[in-house]
Length: 629
Image 1 (cartoon, one colour):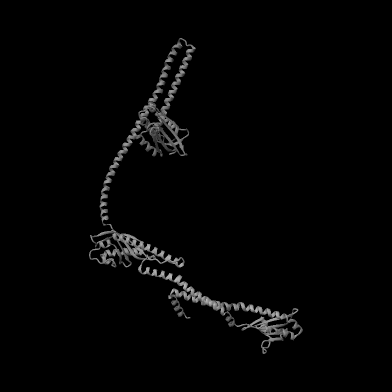
Image 2: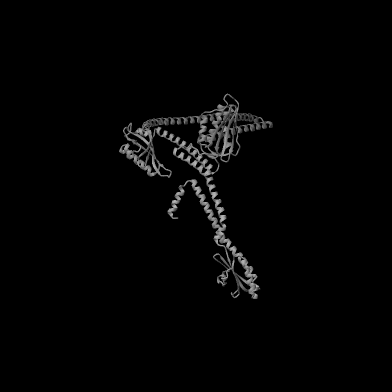
């Protein structure tokens, strides 16, 4: 079969109906199976049957040779011929030749009288030879292990055709069975496969022609064809759902595009409009050509069309979206300004096939921006004037605050001076009283000395002098401590310099200075600060904070009350901070002093202040300060 005939047959088979294809395949399969069976039988004959026959006949020859060794050794030709003649009963044996050791004929048997025995070197070399349908076998004969001769037997085997005729019945039965099976297979295939597939094909054809995705193929079984029909129906349902969703999306997109106030369009690579919306058509002047299929040159002025086309080429060349302003001069209503967003449209292979654009009219916005810019300039000038006025007012407020702080400091200092002076009156008065008493006693003692002094009077005078001296010394020490504390507090508040100090000692000095203030109020002020808390900070500002908080409590927390308590405690937080608490059991208060406290704590002292207050339980101010500033 030539190449052209092969191609023609392939085309014929491809276009053949499925039922005929199955029948043709069945017939060809039957023929192929018969040929394979015939080839298998022939192969069996050549590869299995013949070697087995050679083996069987060789064994028969060797058995016969065992009975001829004595005859050869004794030279008994009659006995040897009689034994060979017995082979006539074997129809497949056509000739037998007995040779001596020197390869001369000793005795022979031939089914035909004209057949003569002759020595064959080839048979000697191979041991057995097939000649057509004849087999020659040569077996050596030994007597007591000594080679005494050879036995050559020629067998006649049945021909291949005879054997094939013997296989004919088998082949006929096989062919008949395969033919019946092929016919049954074709009929069954038509009913089980072809007809359901034709029904499925008919539904698919209607779906293609009518675009009706609601059609379904009948499913009558659950085999492969049934599963195919089920899958086909599921595919139709999916396509129907997607088609409905696509239609909804198309309607939604159409509504959005057509009802959008923005100008929306699509152009091909040559600049022809493929799609425009209602807003695009509205900006065209009357008498303009149909935009679909037209270019910008046909719709707009030459300058505008040139600018639009240049922007389009830039987007198509870069493959990226671009945004820029465009001004149209020949449209309805006069010149308009647009923000145009242009972007390439890609197909499923990533190639640019069109250009999309959305242009938003910003004419009114531009006009509003200009008006807003003018308004902003006016407002900016007004704000600048207001800022200058506010700056002047702020400067005045700062100066007023500084004057208030200075006044507050002077008032506090005057109060401290008055309190210290009051406190100094007591020890100084006591000292003057003690000194004056000693002077009177000394004058009386001097007058008594002239008239004679008894020992008891001397002892009494010495006791009075000692007691008076102790009173004077204690009161003078008290005055020195008051002056020293006042001096240190005054220096710290006046200089605001950083130094190292012990927290408990500094608080004691401040409370000592404040003692005249709270002593007469009936309010008890004390501290419970453990020793050993060393700080490197600003004692003056810290003292001012502490004095303001104590005075705030004395003035506001216990208003209307003549008893109360203010306690100052402290505890370290880690190794770099300390928490100082000023707690009262009054009702709390606020004023200028607390504003100053806030500024000093968060400013110079670098800490923070927290307040905890509860009705009827008092107020606590917690200062969290760094140990070293």
